[in-house]
Image (cartoon, rainbow, N blue to C red; front, side, top):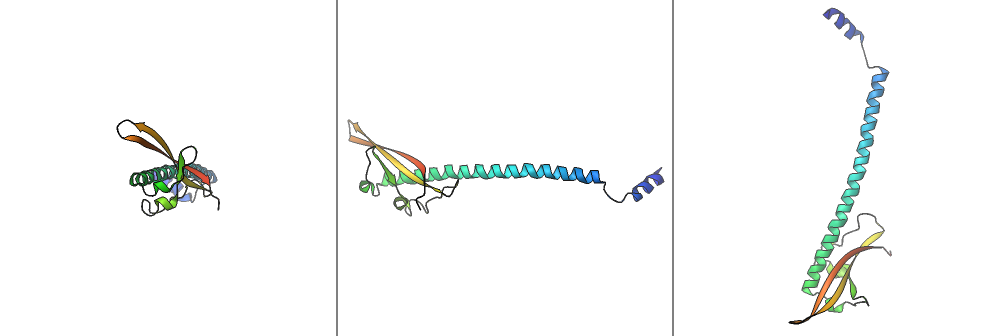
Length: 139
């Protein structure tokens, strides 16, 4: 019995066409899944980078407001808002202004809204709200 099995195995020299086609189909399916997952990972990473950049800009603006660096020089519009620019935060509060990761045509802008409320003990009290937005680059 073993002699017959060994003879059959010696005669077999390669793979059949069906076996090769099955392997190619399996590799194609795996490659398709991998490409989709890679695209999803990149998109999630860009969104996470955007959220991190917004937090960094917000924290740097908080520090800038706390220390009052050039706050009196800002022109407040009719809504009580002004923009904090790259020159205000770099290099003292940020090493570099972050790029918008989702596309290259937009950039971050930081808007600060000032609300003044009366405090019975200390007088006027100013409250700031910071909003990081994007706008199309003018370059």
